[in-house]
Amino acid sequence: MKHIGIKQARQELPDLIDRAEAGEEIVITRQGKAVAKLVAAPKPPKVLPSLAEFRQALGRAGTPAVKLLREERDGR
Image (cartoon, one colour):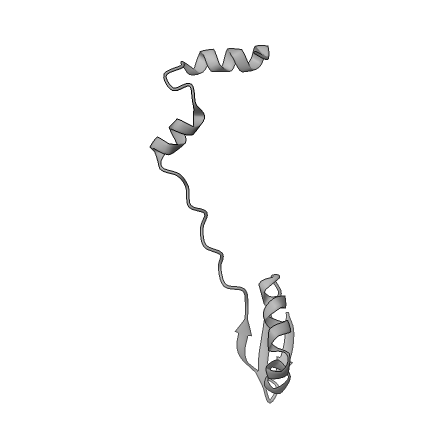
């Protein structure tokens, strides 16, 4: 975690944002006392398809799992 003064943070803000985005935490200080922390924003969660879309993507609907497993095992 890097500590940096407000004046220097103003001058280097684009670089500090890039570093925070890469995972570094930066503490901004005023007269030697911590006043803020710059961290990356959380990434949005991955959107999953609906169950119906997922099942369609699997293909071969209606085929028993045991048959699919045997075919996979036997290399067909």
